[in-house]
Image (cartoon, rainbow, N blue to C red; front, top):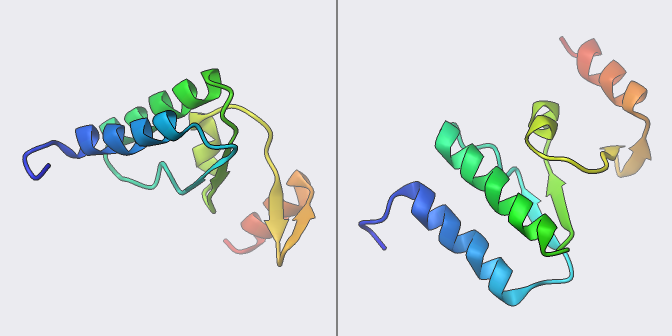
Length: 95
């Protein structure tokens, strides 16, 4: 495993979930890796999971990551669901 590239290791991790076929896969910041190839690998593997009808919950604080995948978006603040407008109002008021 030490001789594999980070992209290959990432593929192995995602393939493991394809084998187990969970009811729900929770990914925490799957696109946080700075490497463009790693982001593309994550996107491709999530697409395969989607085609296998395995629901994926992506947890991230980076709204730009929504461009890497498709599906519904939910915004939360302090443990409650908020509207997209409220989320963006909060985000941009911090700048």
